[in-house]
Length: 330
Ligand code: SF4
Image 1 (cartoon, helix red, strand yellow):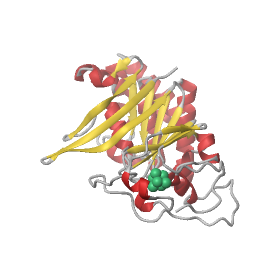
Image 2 (image 1 turned 30 degrees about the horizontal axis):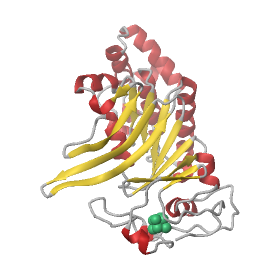
Image 3 (image 1 turned 120 degrees about the vertical axis):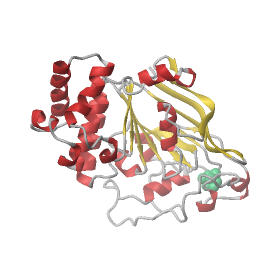
């Protein structure tokens, strides 16, 4: 069963000179209770794709082509009022930095109960009781006391737990989490990711986890879509992707993060160069200036996403060795 299906999604930025494409033909699906990780560097199009699902693309940005189907709705065809109803109830979002997402002059209790009263029609008393349950569920002690506090009185980890509680408050079917742990230290990151994916699985909520860090999603995502330069370049189950990465960019990402399942003396190898400027036109495969496997074809023709064994890969020369990362590829 599919909860979310994004098909051939293309997003343009509108400039005086004309439209410039930032996201090309993005395809992915999420089932109820499943975690999909969308991984990529800054400018890869992962956050724009999430904003398009939420109907929150900013001024000057537009969906050019493609379709977004969610729970029987064609999201791109919905009128703004209906989309607004779905947002915050059926679809929720957890943002990167809770300090800027939470209202500093409203108590935690107000922010947690507001959506439940508006969207679910709960009384103040019932919303308050549900808020206590939610804070307990996300691991916050003394929940009645925390409801009276303000965001600045909580630690970064607690604020992010509150954001998770707010996202779950209206019983959503889908949560989009955009770099939900970037502002936290490593230990808290692992706790928050484990908590988010467990709660979504327990509640049957589909989770799209957006991150730049391929290393942190291995344990929490069932499927992974790797994006580069506005395109999905590799898609596979997390197990297959980590065991046999096929795209040189994915292999480069895995070579550059520490992994406990590989020999300790294996050196980390960063990918040379920098991600392309999203506003820059790069002919052929956008990874070719950084790729050790690139040839003339790569510099001229864009590879399409094609099935190779259990993976889908957009590359003229995917790694078919079936090997995990043994050496640097770029
Ligand atoms: Fe490298 Fe060519 Fe594959 Fe692009 S298409 S990732 S340049 S081998």
